[in-house]
Image (tube, rainbow, N blue to C red; front, side, top):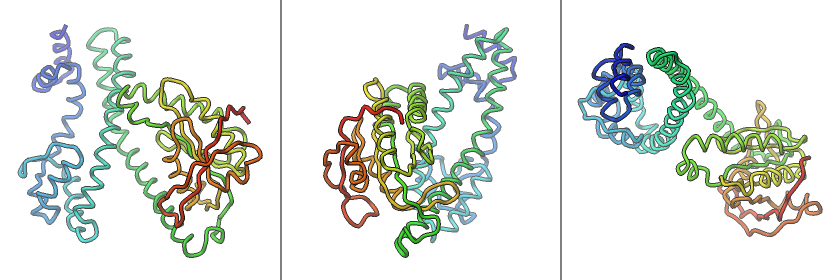
Length: 358
């Protein structure tokens, strides 16, 4: 069987060296992916020492950065970087006074952890949903593997511009949040252009990362899909805005009653299944509307309060409870220090909900 696969790979033009490496790791069919990746690997012609000699980050810093990314550390004279990557590392070195090496290493740890997870998910889902189907539908092994090879070659380049674009948009979002927080501290939120009184509902899957690590990415994706469908089905008719946040959602309402009711329904709908449950937080306050999104300290407070809610729980602040006390039952949940808030925040926990869709 393996011999047939090897012969088919050779017929596709995969090199003997690439096939041998794939066979050694017990995944001969994986050679078709390696072959597509080889041209990009061949572009890595610049060493860490050459980057340092051009005025970029030092060899020592370079190796620490690669280690922070979770990648193997290259030898100082190993051809490890593409010219484009080298140019970026040279520029970072020249900006050392503005962007010190220790800051670069901190950012690299975050990038490495999240990008590794993205790559793992992409490959697992491709092999599960694309490769498996194409191999089953192929008229013969050669045409089936060629279809897989073509599909991977077409899909691989798509991710990079999308990831760059998403990163840029999140940077824009964070800059806007920072600017509005500063403006709020200077002028007060209510006096800023575009300021509105709204209620924020944040909800996400509790302990989702641990679940994904335990059950695998396919199960994790299914849970996220079910959660997204639940939010759409249970958010009611009175929401103003919905934004997906990885494994969670931010919803905006004009009325705190609608926000609490929706949050309770979402928590109840995800309760009791053998997957991560949901926790939620609600806060009313003044926010600034900009380019269709909401910014300001009220948004940040509502998001950070999720940490105070356990699985199957919804917590809210005093302004929400004062507005909804006649409609819902609340239990005091103590106070919490929240980053960016001068005083501790009084919290309350929603008592058993079982709410119908509004």
